[in-house]
Amino acid sequence: MKIFMLYGLILTASFYSLHSQEVIAIKAKKIHTVTQGTITDGTILIRDGKIEGIGTNIQIPWNAKTIDYSQKIIIPGLIEAHAIRGYDIPNETNPLTPFVTVRDSIDPSDEDFIFALRYGITTLNILPGHETILGGTGAIVKPYGLFVPDMLLVPDSGMKISVSGVRGQTRMGATAQLRRYFDETFYHMSKKDKLTEPEKTVATPGSFRSSESVKYDAVADLLKGRYSAFIYCESPSDVIRADELAEE
Image (cartoon, rainbow, N blue to C red; front, side):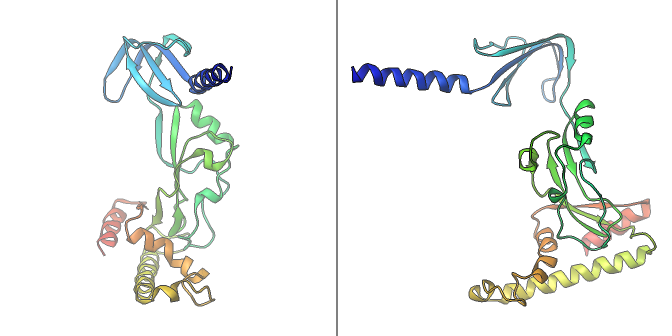
């Protein structure tokens, strides 16, 4: 009797495991792909949210939910490489805020995400605005999800930098501020590297775990190559200046 009960439990567990995997088969008149060209009268098989197969001879599992788009055309989701959708204010009032992140400001219920899906946009690189010299880090998200962590694909996609300056400021002044901030960051990094491990872990007001450290750590991560820089250039000449600054 115990053997039959155990066998029944195994069968139940296996059956539940099989059904816990969501399988969707989408039939379409035309499917435009990235690597296989255009497929006519094809099927897309999706398992657990990931594409498992695309083609004309796809075997559809018995437990798959079939969606008939046989008179429609399917294209890959569009990517918005630079977006300011879905959060309250794109620019900080302080021109130097490399330590902020758009993750703290994204609102998953913002209607801009609904519009993005309607336009076929399935991935967005949300970045700070360009009216801040060092604007903080962006994030790559999907335009749907109940909470921000549900949307996140890349938490820190890059730091936003503007060489054009803030309102009422010259380009010369903006470049000088950038150079000074990077110089201070290099100085901060050199001091931090010289500290011994016990000294680094002491959380005193003057230690490198204080807010003063936070001020430079984000730019230090940029200089170490943890993420890229997105540099806003208002004019063609700004592109040359941005390239020179990157070389420095």
